[in-house]
Image 1: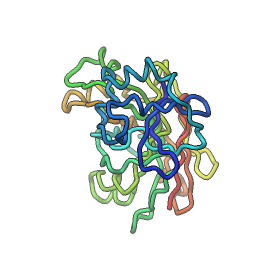
Image 2: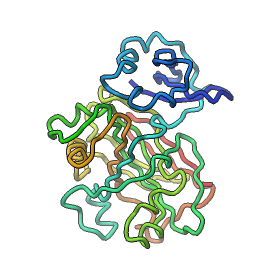
Image 3: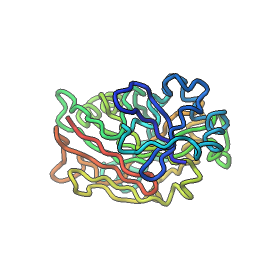
Image 4: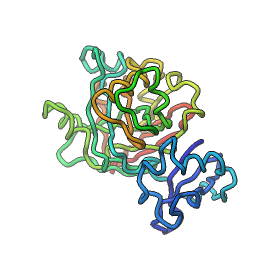
Length: 288
């Protein structure tokens, strides 16, 4: 399944459905309270692998009414995660270009959940920040509670995957000594366009990942280059904090980031970025 959240026309109602080519199966009627906005029902209700909604979506989604994709405004498929957990320096060649040694265990930081924006969003360049940067990343969406689990069971807790752009304010990041401010400016977590469930992605460690800036490819790699793979990350994180349905893990970025280039690339208003990951579509973001 390819799960999307969207709006139609001027309606404020957040709807949920299945992306099928150029159309969406509007599955809002399958929600426990179909007259409510999908976002009001909580991520655990909508994105739990064992929950009643996803069970109905699997069984009845192909019979839901169709809406043309061009008539829908896609939103972030996980609009307000309980947690956005990020992994730093998880590609060896990115660690090298950053002038740092690859970590011996996952380097964990976070973004604020309110940083999440959807496809096509315009993100403001932070005031006083000359070094805004891009980072294409594979995002993992949790679908079953995980707490102190074994690596061998980790994938059973993953709902699916989506594209992410870990936008970063480098001068804030490097000046502070820790990364929260530099990673959590307004709109700094674009996600989308959909969640591809695990059955759609045979191997999340065999996906091409790239980012185009104003049409030019500036990052290009494969998720096979991850230092810590998805089950390792899920096991590690669940060892010290419970992971809940709808939590999002950003797994790290490949080389090619702006600050490491010579001369450096700094994002400016009007710049547009497109993250592309095989089987996960493309995520476009504009700087404003």
